[in-house]
Length: 208
Length: 327
Image (tube, rainbow over all chains, first blue to last red; front, side):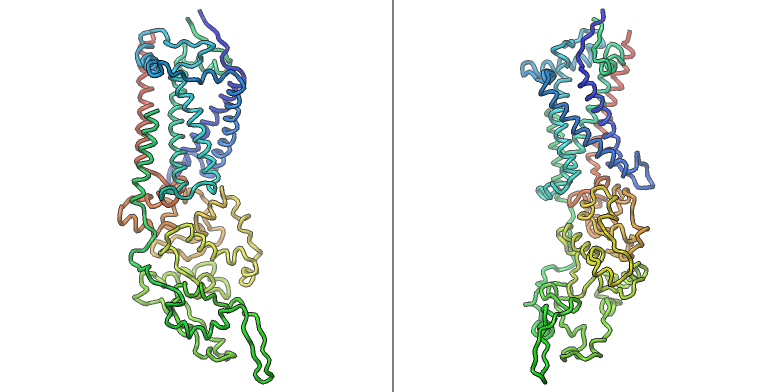
């Protein structure tokens, strides 16, 4: 029997869609700038265009992030991001074990989706790290690169701009890895497309 | 969390370790312990005979017959700043090393005032002592540059012999070198009073003509004008062939790429030194500054490819087992 739960209100779906789109643009243009080639070599997109797209998307992403934070403050959505200390590691291990072996043996999901528990422990920790650690760092360092005059010029003999950039591209890389895993895990619903449909309809569906 | 922390720690270690291999912006062949300054110039006392007028904003003009003395404004072109002069490249000179002894007479005789000034190569050209600086080639480049087409232009317009101090070779702070060198250009190109003395062209508003650059001010403070406005010359340290504006660099990836143009221009001196010692192209601009697209760290690149490749491999293997265990 199919179970339907309304888990994703309109504001979350719109924010998520915008966030996903901006993330893809930022990854694409970011890689393009980082590995920019001269005329003789391959370039994903013209450098000057990449700069404009990257900066514009980043500014919109910042506003979208503020919306996310405000949404989590003023709605009950934040409850999904609260990590319990009890059984933290064992729950993570249980979830990992399910992804690695359990799901192939048709075992039941160890942390079934409910109205109170939208995310499993692995999702929860990765989303918290991405949204509450990765995003602030990448936004702050991004603004540092956009306005380099506000940065410390030298830090222990190393260019402040360089450190800011290393931090920016490292977090950017980690978030890109997160994005790849996130997209893949979204194919782990009843059907590969089920969870993608949920993010459009707002309803989580699964067979019991 | 531990993995993330370990990753960041590794990154910082890489940065900090690389710092020790960073280039030093000093020419080891030259002795920079030379004490410049008026107190070390052997001819300072003699020079004062000139600087008593030329070193002041006003000079005294006396009519001995009528017994009248008046203060007259010293023309800016003939005013020498003592401090700048005694710290310039020519700090140790006597005025009469380059100027006629007849100028010791006051009022100066017209013949002495009309003396042909020396050019750089009158002293520096075809001389073993200065061979490494390739003044002859610099002159050849200059003669092909747009500046050479202007009547009344000479080396002195950019390199005032009374104040010019060689910069890129003995600079310890690149941003100061950039500021110093760019100010030479801006002396005319951002000062219409000076600009109109040499040309009838309309005033150039630098900020407007360069507003196509993303983060214009960062470009102005991070590179010299000549990075984009000269033709690269591999044999001399600072290119002197100024190009017409339509031939200036406008493609971002000339600099923002791994084989950045800046390695042959702004970072040429450092990269030559650094490559000789370490042989790591682009490492030269790793610590001192940062250029998007040009700064690449091979360790970070390999590390990121391995991690991303690993993730993709896990996804492929996971998908494979999902397919074979579907039923």
